[in-house]
Image (cartoon, rainbow, N blue to C red; front, side, top):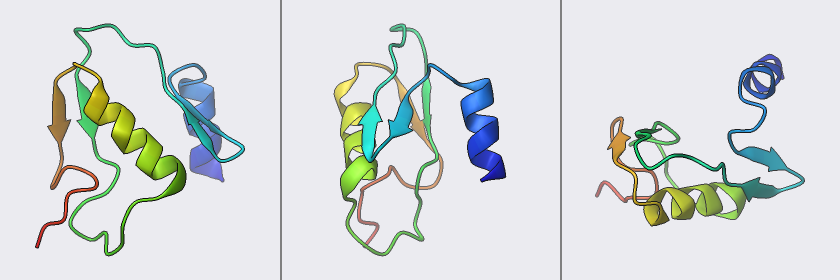
Length: 76
């Protein structure tokens, strides 16, 4: 809960999760996205808002840097 408060305080308009839906942020084309959502420890398929967020990351033309593995990619 504390981290959620920090997130919404520091990033009030940069993508929000509200009522089970991911609302993608408006970003400039030169913004680099750091994908640190999930890594090799994820043991199930993505669903819901997480699947929507990863789909958005994959759709935007921006450069994406993944820490560990790209979210949603099966490491096996």
